[in-house]
Length: 432
Image (tube, rainbow, N blue to C red; front, side, top):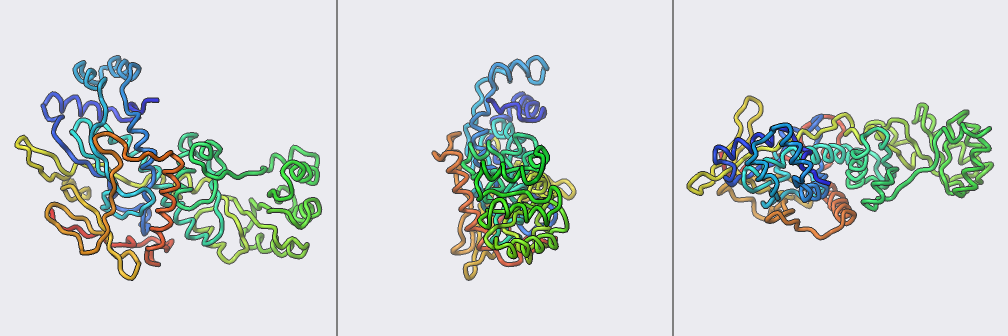
């Protein structure tokens, strides 16, 4: 499927006008960055790059797309002919997927002609703004949960395509599984799920429902115990499944109190190994509030697929450098009030002290990075060709590993759930 119309009207009209002014073929560099982090969080998480590179490969104007543009007179006939042959032929570099970022971090750079690069603006921001938002929220939940397991189960709270992207981003950030089968099939994410309250209600009794579930799924399943009376639900679950029951799920009530009561009841019945799964509109704050409770698994839905209150990461796509008629590169930047950004193509580095990340350093022009600093960017596309031969599942697995390794280098202040300053300062070297 073509992704060429997953864009805004003005991307096409800019290209049309730039071609008329003879500026469309100027070499240009665009950068993706955020001016601030949503909710004054300590860090953001880079996610969606793997999906994005696939989408750019499908950014083609076929007959249907061209006929639509022609029918609505969006661009000139001459530009329609140009679009018919459009293939992005430039370079894309950026932070590795799973890495962390801060205000000003150039997490993606797109270099090519102005026309071919500006056309990708909306697609790039659409993918990265959502995936980074979900991954950033999910990472905070993972840190709040500590060693406990998290399952993403927000498909019913998002657009069907966004639900798959959310499952991918949450898994990248450290969630252990998803309820979404399409995400499981495409990205090899483990899938989990057993039964809802409707399953209990369609039976003549809770006992009948539990027996049916155990007969089909075995005693290692998870029984939902709060459809009626929770205490009686625990007793019925153990009476039917035995003390080897895998888990019970709680989806209501004052969770810190209820979880402790259920744990004590299970232990009293001899089911010390039976785990407790909690759901019920969890977010990073409620998860942190359950740190002292005997919870084994958290199931998170609405909060994770909506970025826990911030469904977009606030990323922008700005032209920072372009070539003049003499073949010289010029640094350019927007100077609007409260919307300024440094011009010039940047290189990004991270410094460490005693194994912990210390500072993000961006160099422009003749600026030199600190000695021993590690460069953060890698090549995703060169000359329009993807530099990865990995499958979607392999790309995700690699990003997940990188995130877990990167997050371990952050200072302890990065894991505060209160609004505050970025966990690492970002310093610009060189440029204006």
